[in-house]
Length: 110
Length: 252
Image (cartoon, rainbow over all chains, first blue to last red; front, top):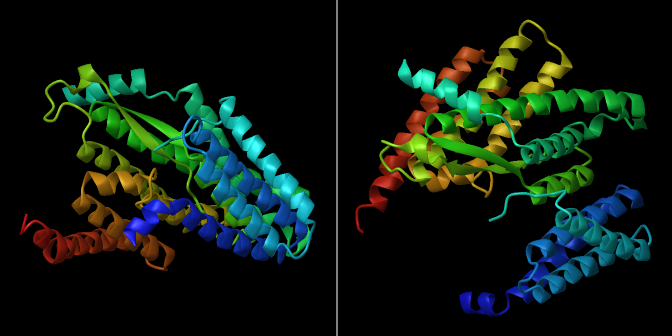
């Protein structure tokens, strides 16, 4: 089990985050499409921060995990445009990355 | 007497917040204030920008005061023990708190603002046993934050007997929630520092804070709630030692 986790952690988190994305989308869309768009934008910002933290390190598995979240979120978005979801997620990533890269956000790291 | 003069001098020289800390604190206060005022932007389902802005401003006051007390006590304690404390915000925690606020319509407050970093002040640690930065000292510094927040909640509770307004009630609820979240053993929150500093200290801190949170939320008087929570903390601390910590070290 431990061996499996260490060899396939990216795939494991891809699946877990995809399920979380699906649940978040169902939950957010139950309120309104606007809430769903805000949540996906904020999630994108977390993704941008994650990619910034992995700057100059191994990043490919993290792209896979973020794509997993997006797939899950799109699958769960039953009310609202999926194109807008993709655009806002990418914009969120760019915005989050930009804020960290320019030094507007400098936070604690472990 | 000499120690008090020394501490006063250190506070004068090193207490002030850095520009980065102030910027981070402003961001954290605004985000947390938005989270705790999320469901108060209007009456019922009717949105009102004016009412929302008023409640948001009240929430900013509550959060800023609470953060200031929490960090000041930690900072004074760290200066007293020859360290300089730096507060850093945790953007993952703040963003996740915002997401949860939107998903739960503001009914769940996720208060994860940031954590502390301790710097060694070489000259001020001379003569101390374990001169350098050590886990126990950092754990103790971190534990003072949630204790201060609980005391602030108790102060507001005592105030509510005289001035019973929704602002005071919200301040009590926020401080209790903040103390409970702070003591969770999730890095970079204070609880994680205390946990890694000393499991015994963590056992007392988590039991005491949890008991205080429950008792201050009840109709008990403030004094009784604080004394009872202290004794509950001590009893659970001893039980933790008897049933776990004592056995953990029996067979190396």
